[in-house]
Every structure is written in C-alpha cells, then in structure tokens.
Image 1: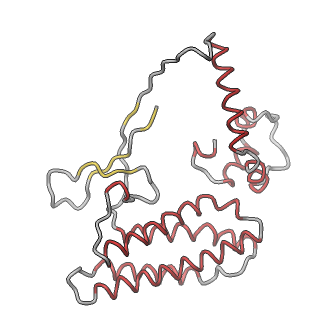
Image 2: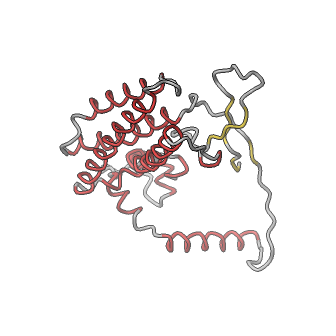
Amino acid sequence: MKPGLDIDFDRLANLASNHRDMRRLAGLSDVLNPAPISAATLANNLSLLTDDVLTQINRAIVRLGHKAVGHSMDAGLQARGDSFVVETDVEYPTDLRLLWDAIRAAIQQPVRLCKLLGVAGWRQVRHWLRALKKAWQKARRIRRHHTLFETVIRAYLKRADHRIRKRADIRVELDTAYAGLLLEKSDEYMSYVHRLRDQVERRLLKGETIPQDKKIFSVFEPHTRWIAKGPDRRLREPRWSSGCRCA
C-alpha cells in the first residue's frame, strides 16, 4: 500500500492506527487501537520483508489465484490490459531549476526530523536554501555568451555542493538517532540531486549534449516525458504527458 499511495511512514502509521478497512486488510481488529502504531514500528517491520519473503508471498498468491479459477499452473495464461496517457502539471524544466528543486526536497524532510528529535545541525538550513536560491536565480538569468556565464554557473554548483555535503552530515546524525528508515523519499530525491548536478556541469560547462533518455523533466513527477512542444515554438509552456500506466 505504501508504494501504491506514494506515502511516507507517518501517513501509513496514521492509516494503520485509525482506518478500520485498512486494519481489516492487515488482519488486525477493526476496533481502533488506543495505542497508535508508530512510524518507527512500521519501518522496522517492513524492513523484515526481504526479496525472498516477498517472492514467496507472490508465489502463494498466484497459486491461490490459479486454484480459484480452476486453471493449471503449467498451462498458458492470456491476459489483457489497458493503458492511458494523462497530462502532468509541471513547470518548464531546466537543469538549473531541477537541481534546486531536488536539493530543496532532499533537505526538507531530514530537517523536520532533526527538529523533532532534537538533533543538531539543522538551524542554518533556511539560510543555506535562501543563498542557494539566489545563486540559482542569478544563474538562470545569465546568457551563454556572457563573459561571466561560466563563473556564475560554477558559483551555483559550489553552493549546491556545500548543501549536498551538509545534507550528508545531517543524514549521518539521523542514522545515529535511528531515524534513517524514515528518509526513503528524501534519499530518492538525493539520487536526482547527484544526477542533475552532473548533467548541469556536463551540459553548461563542458558543452556536452545529454541524451533524451537520460534527462529528467520533473523531480516530483519522475514519470513525466516531453512528447510535444506544440505548433507554436514561441510558446513558453510546452505540453507534457506522462508515460502509459496500466489500468
């Protein structure tokens, strides 16, 4: 349910404690528990679901499904699926903006956890983000032919590298405080940070061309693909669409 709803452990814990239908699905009493299930408990329990355990569960479900429809496991099975395309509402992507979005998203959740757990090292984060945003705004306004173009881009990347190192320090502190399992989404954003940081340097400073299949068009909607710019090249906002999803 967690990956299906794309939620964090806090919301999952709230559902497990207060949602009767979900408690029935989990085999728990539908009487709401006076002692709520904590996010840490869920994280620890879900960490026990190894790949081998999940494979065994999937095989058991498939066997039960074949038995329910009277179908042999050895016989072939035909299935039909449907797919559709939906429009994704994202802002016009640039490497510089996407790097800023990824760093901001990767830092926010660890900072909130530091504040809740009393872990030091988070008080200057707002100042870091404001300074990084100013560097991004300055970098996005400068033109390639400007003599200061390379200097401004390098200054932006230098500030970004500083935030990346600080976030790594905070991450270590949270691991020590046993809160590392709550940072799954934040760690995913960090993977975008490293990828985008590399692409900014390669494209803007080294003049390389990034292949279409390697580009990221949205940090928050990673399935987004650029399918059309529209007939009018003067349009500031291109049309966007996600990839096909099975219904």
